[in-house]
Image (cartoon, rainbow, N blue to C red):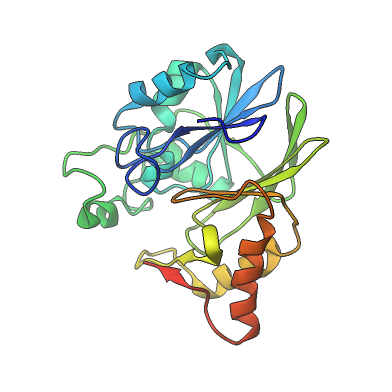
Length: 246
């Protein structure tokens, strides 16, 4: 599904558009011209379906050089090992997420919560990733003709990262589970979900104007994406918590 000139939605599960396995988050493909990158990996239950969606775009597999992971929860990161093997790409994440991925640490990734919710089958395996390139807050990397800025966004999960993608014509923000359409946030009873950190993160997102808002679930905005951040900030200004999905 092509969303803009440079952005394709190639994975999406039950909390989205049903393009791939039900347990997958949105998986975004960024076309930088000479090279491309994926943002998030899905759960890895059916990597073949995700690869088939990639093959329906005009972007050949060998141009995809990086996978940028927002956080370690399995619906976003469980597919990283399979995509690395299939596409020979570099997996990139924050140091905290990198440690979880390298260890294949199901406890730190709160896989048991997903099983309790019915998102993952009892036999689901959270595969480890042999190598992860660690990204630091405010770091900028090139993906062909576009620039990606790393934005630390803790709160929903430890080491959560958003990615601000810029080219000459527009700026797009990929928020993972930090902020959804309508200014909604996700709070869960996981060891690393931190409301105070999350609210601080929302304020920080207000410092990054963007045309597109592309979260990890449900719908998205191609224009005036900053209005969703403003909606969450308006709740904070009233001394309230933004609308919450839990």
